Image (tube, rainbow, N blue to C red; front, side, top):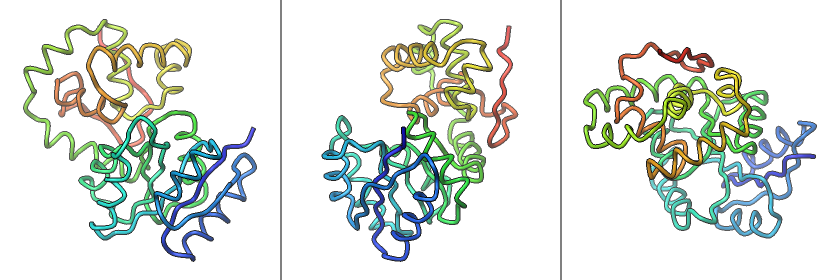
Length: 234
């Protein structure tokens, strides 16, 4: 079964470039291309596509408009993979907080693009490795002081739930987390749902932020961008 994608980009050359890149992948089908996020939302809603790939301008005004659109109704907002031309950690974090499910840089190649599309379509949060390292360091710098209120709230988590939170916060996908902890992906999803309910977080982006702010993951932990391994502490 193919992954159905709606492409959104204001510039014709970018729209056609994305269409060509995505259409070349065997498992990806581009159902429509649009110039405006609102049109993409309408197409996604009527076609029941898997996600929207949205090219975002580097200008803060256009990015802010897209982010407001994304946050307008989070319950019915499509999964969005953002192609961002502003690659600072603050910009990446802002996009994740706005509700996008993935962020890749505008110079990403076809391999990276398809990897990101597959991850978002699978329900994962995806940040391009070259952006993830800066984002993690930026979060560390902002969360060096543990929020004691969140630390207390985190105490309601079981040991297994804490292991899952840490593994996800270190940049692992759901499938990687399952392999690392020797459990099934469906079990990880079940735990993740319960964790979100307990901690009152909307999605994995908020969960990662919570993990650092509550001290579940230490800002001093040695983590490399793209890390896919984690050994639970005793």
